[in-house]
Structures are given as structure tokens and as C-alpha cells.
Length: 132
View 1: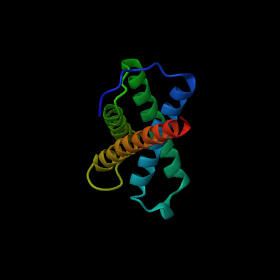
View 2 (view 1 turned 60 degrees about the vertical axis):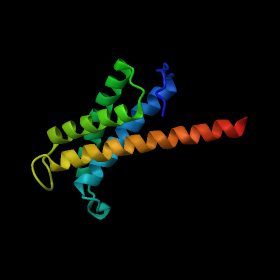
View 3 (view 1 turned 90 degrees about the vertical axis):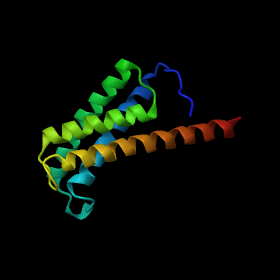
View 4 (view 1 turned 135 degrees about the horizontal axis):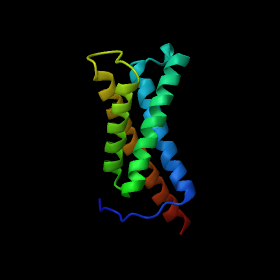
């Protein structure tokens, strides 16, 4: 896949990108904390995951805008690393070693970021070809 040149994002696109990063990080944290069992999800889990998602999403978004990163792999890697670090700092691991949950959360956030970005690009490409 050819690397695209950076295009200035409009106000709506920046909001969508920030929202995507926050939600992907939050979802990854929720899933890792309850180890995939949504039946044990509590309000406490939701509060912790939201804190993690907001901080990691804002951090990753700020860096991507400041450095003008537009590569889906780089954005996913940045969100994954940000999520892992923030998850590690916000709460202790609920499984494995000291950092196991944070690492899993970061990997899931990065994968979500990449696949959502690819899906949105494919959808937008299909919509633009159908309209012509």
C-alpha cells in the first residue's frame, strides 16, 4: 500500500480520529480487565477503562497531529503503546505478571485501531466509487 501524503484534517475529521482512539483504547481496556467476560463488567471497570481510554487516546491523537503521522500502522502502534503505558500506570494487572494486562490491552487497542482505520478507508473508497 502506497503511503499517502499528510492532508490537513478538517474539524470533523480530527474529532472522529480522537473519538476513534479514545473508544478503541477504552474498549481494549474493558475487554482485558474482564478477560473477555462481559457478564462481570462493573461500573468500576467502566470508570477505569474510560480514564485509560481518554488519556491514551488524547496522547496518541496529540502526537499524530503534532508529527503529522498518517500511516495506519504507525497510528495503531502509537495508540497501542500509549494504551499499554497508561493502562499500566492507572491500575494493577488483573491477570499474569505485573504488566501482562497492560501489554494485552495495548495490543488489542493497536489492532482495533488498524482494523477500524482499514475498514473506514475501504468503506469510504467504495462509497466514492458508487457515487461516480
